[in-house]
Structures are given as structure tokens and as C-alpha cells.
Length: 555
Image 1 (cartoon, rainbow, N blue to C red):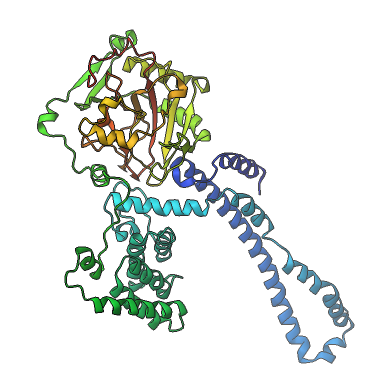
Image 2: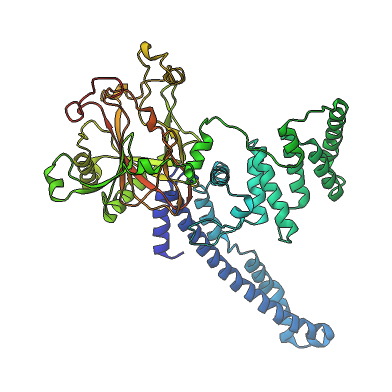
């Protein structure tokens, strides 16, 4: 390895060592793997060149010996009658053949293996592979993509061609199976069979696929198909012990079912008999609305509402700096008022903030509503870092700009948070403000009762800060996203799409200090692209005269 390559490699290890795995949660960190793999390929090619040179020497020796032994074996005594030939035979067997042995035993792979061993400690883990598989399945569900579309790589806005092989699809199905997700197991194992039937070569066999598929459909309650698939498996591999036992078990259950002969089948039973399976219901009540908005469907931007949305120049309550250079402001939603500002950050500022944030990126966490403890969660897939003004002048400059635009003080605001979303990166519907216990008089007022019951035990997440609740959110989009990645508000039916250099702003609290529950929002999974954002959360303290309180609860 050349000295400069060694230096680069050491530097790269320094970057990778900060990552702490979970590569799938940040595309920005996954780019490091590209360079690591490129280095491994170079190391492998160097090993091949050394190995080819060694084989060339061995082949040359073999050809030379073949010609010589053909002549000597034809007349051994006559050949050895010449004293030089006799000497050379003794020398070859005593010196030259042992030298060849040393050449053959020479470990030319040592440098490559050493490089691979060092880099392996920074490789993605089983958790990463499972997380990446789940990400593809999340995209599959959210954007209603069938496995064949994903396998062919037919995604909108893609710049590079990428396809899943039979073995890749089998890996997807196996990951789902290991997680107890039989719905996706069936979808991906069926895709494997489809590609195998099309003649695609693979190390995965049909018997392996049918083994997983038959048990998955059984778990989904489709006994008829489980029996059929198990019989197909046994026809391919009659000695498959587990399949034989499963078939007897499935047939016994099927016989018991026939004996009961329920005349009224449910829709689910009929559907399962046709080999069509419904996606399981999960923990998120607004799942359908949320995912529809992510696809750009169900947006409630009616013509009447659209007439109330305007564009204007914004001078931030006549801040001197903005009087000279006002920002372009565009209404995204009327109530609650959500606005977008244009040209908030320059490309140079964005790149600098990404540069100083990237080494600090760590898996984004959420606060457990019961314990108040920060923890990772599957519904938030990204990495984030927090930047202080001392980190770089650009941070202080951007903070001051957000203060001028909003008219709120940043003195009590949180640090600038920078986030990079990973594969299928998302943050499911959530509130930015802390849902503190309400006054007891509010418990019985309409749908506020459900809100009270859901969050009455939640900790006051910001009590220790002494700065009150999060009054407002300022969200900077630091990249364009080719597909997906919208910010959506399920209760409103609003969807806001990322535009590099722009920012959106809304108040999380009413003027009374009560949370505005209409601001429940989500970051949709990134389908294609690399999404970078930064945000500033303004808190209540210090805003008393900048945003005075209202006189009623709903102000």
C-alpha cells in the first residue's frame, strides 16, 4: 500500500470510528461506506496482481519442468550419463523445488486480509441490514410500491440504475420472517419465486423459499395455501424433515376446520383463501391519513382555503436588517398559520453546517412519555447533532437570522439541531411541544378528554431547562429531495415539500400557552434522495413582550 493511501485510510478510520454503527439511519454517514468499499476494492486488486505474478512464475516453472522431464523420462540412464544433468537433477530436488514450495506457500493475501480485518470493525452490523430491509418495506408500504417495482429499481427521481437479485429479495423476506413480519415475508418470498421462474440464476433454491413461504402463510391463517406450498416443497426435497412434520400438522388442522364447516366465512378468511393478505394494523391511529399525505394524496388545500394564502416581503416587525433586505414569505397554511421563507440559507452556509455537524451525528432519540428518558425508536429514523454558536461563525449568523425573521429571541431557544435522514428516514406523527397535564377543568371538554387521557402521565420534558415549553418551530430545509420526505400535518391535511434554502415556521402553542394540537406533524420517509434539515425550537421564556399572551384559552 502506498504511503498516501495509508494516510487516507487512517483518516477514514477516524471518521468511521465516530459512527457507532446504525449506518442505515443516516445517508450522510452511509457515504463513508462508499469510500471504505472503494479502498477495499483497490486493496483486493493489488492482491490479485501479486497473486497473478506468483501464478505466472509457478506456471513458467511447471512448463519448464514438463519439457525437461519428458526428455529425461524417455531415457533416464542416457540422460543421467551426462554429469551436468545428474548434478542439475540433484540441485533441483534439493534447492529449486523447496524454493518453489516457499513461493507457493507465500501468503500474498496478508496485506489484503489485514486491511479487511481492520475495516471490518467499522462494517454495518446485522442490525444495520435488518434496519435497511425494514426501510425498504416502509417505503413499500408508505408509497404503495409492490416488490417487483422495488426489485427493478423503478423509483421516481433516481439517477442510477439499481436492481435486487433473487438472493437480495430472499434476504428481504428472511429479514421480515426473523422479525415475525409474515405479511412482508410472503410478499418478498413470492417475488423470489417470480424471479426464479423467470430464469434468474441464484444461490437461493426454490425449496428454501417454499420453506419460509409455507410457514408464513400458515401464520397468516391461510391453511389451504400452507398445505399446497408444503407439498410443493416436499416434491422438490422429499427428505425435508421439517416440511414433512409441518404437512401432517397443517393437514390435521385443515381436517378439523372442515369438520366444523362454518357456513359464514369472514372477509379476512375469504381473502386469505385467495392468497391476498391485508397489512396488519399497527400502533399509529392516523397511519392511513399520514401515508396518504406522504404520497401527495388527501391534501385538503381547497380553492377557498387557497384564496387565503398569499406571498409577501417580510421585514420581521421592521428589523433594520430586514428593512434593507426583506425575506420572501409564502403562506403554506392559513390556520394554524404555517409560512415558508425563501433564501434563508446560502449553499455555502448549508455546506459548512453539514461539514461541522457530520462528525457529531448520532442516532436521533425521542423522549419516553412515561419516564422522560431519551431513547431510540423505530418511528424516528435519522441522525442528529447539536451545534453551538462557538462551533463556527456560520451557526451564530444563522441563529441571528432566525431571530430577525421570527421576532423571537434565541437566548432561551435550544441549540441548532442538524438532522440527516437515513434509508426510508422518517419521523412519524408527533408534537414538538411537551404535553403537560392540563387543568382539571379541561378534562371533560369534547375531544380534549382523549388528549388528557393519552398524556396525563407524561413528564414535563422541558421543566429542567427552566425556559418553558416549545413555543415555535423554525425548520430549515438544507437539501432538495428527489421523492418523498415531505413534512405533513395529518390533522390539517397539509403537506409541505422540501426545497433547499427555504424554511418553514409555525407556532406550537396558542397565545394562552396551551398546546395547539393541530400542529401534530411528521417527516415522511425519504423515498429517493438525501434529506438534510436543521431546526431551532424557540421556548416561552423571554417571549413575553415579543409574543404577548392571549386573554382566552384558545387565543
